[in-house]
Image (cartoon, rainbow, N blue to C red; front, side, top):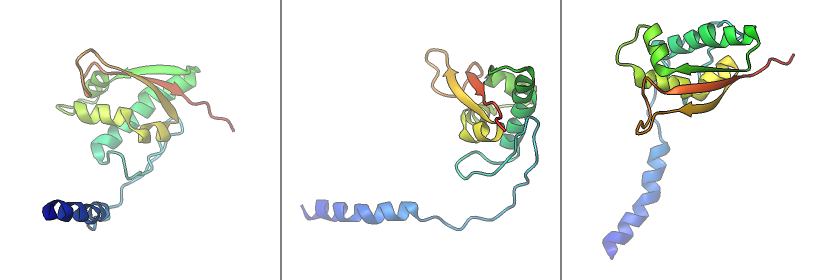
Length: 139
């Protein structure tokens, strides 16, 4: 019984340690404007790095900007299509993660309406199809 009590008393201490973070190296990430009014602001909960940034820039320039310019309100993109057009190899999980991330929605002013997957596909597949709504700029 004492062992159980000790374990229960240790839980709050362990939870407090989870919130403690080790010092992180501060490396400035460059920001640059993207076509279609997009920007690449760094948010802590999204994928970072050159591959993720390139994927976001590609999506904003090749999908969002043309859809917005043509007056479309909805467009679709598949992970495999983006992966192939960018010439990536074995980065499907990153591509799908960036496409489903909130950072893409915020930077490109779009809203993810639906992710369509084949049966028995858990998360990242070349066939995952994402349907977005283009948010209209109201100025």
